[in-house]
Amino acid sequence: MKLIKKLEIQSKENIINFLNKQAVGRFATIDINGFPQIIPMNFVYVQAEKRDNSGILKQDSIYMHSYRFGEKIDNIKRNSNTGFEVDQHLAFLPSYYFHPSDASQADTLYKSVVIKGQSLIIEDKEEKTLALNSLMEKYQPEGNYEKLNSKMHSVQEVTVIKLIPTNMKGKYKIGQQWTPSYRLKIAEKILTREKENAKLIFQVMGIEILEDKNLKIKKEPIL
Image 1 (cartoon, rainbow, N blue to C red):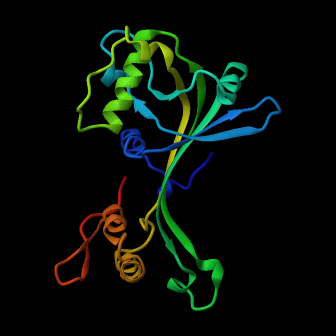
Image 2 (cartoon, rainbow, N blue to C red):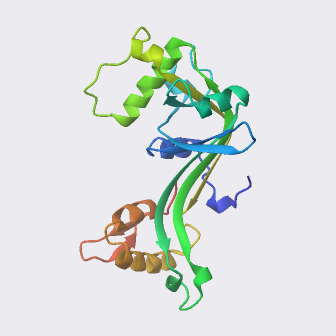
Image 3 (cartoon, rainbow, N blue to C red):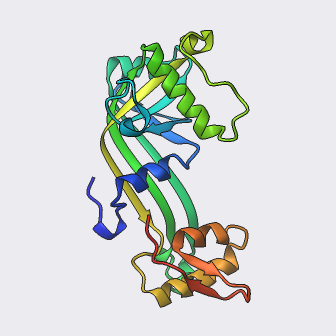
């Protein structure tokens, strides 16, 4: 997959931060007839150098938990080539933002990451424990639970899927290609149409809403 440079997320760290802020990813396996099977999954991206002091994790990995049986499990055992996609839709930009009558001018602001890699079913109890605790840390950061350990029946019963990325590309389109003045012009239109979501959209675009409701660019939009 080749991306236009200015639309590509250049930093791996920024890609990982984006991934672990998103709640759902789409996991793709290949079924028995050669068709992709795509399923929404909870997940966590774990960096080897930051999370492993025991030699368990040798490479960055995406972990997902699953029932012990099912089509995706069969698919992985038959063909380990898999894909993963995460995206965040920010705003639809109607065609009239850009042209009074040309519908083809409509656009979208978004961020996305596409990953290709090899997946396997984790059998090692210590690595399963690491994966499940990492998932808990992501989805329940407030705590109020006891960490899992490898001797727990729940750890032994659940299936953990591990995806090892071999190719990872991030893309974002948040107005970074526009001049500052044009970006503010579009932002004013967004503020009118997307009142409830404008704050989140502008946070990503690097635009601040002032007390008098005027807008200013507080930084260049980078991810």
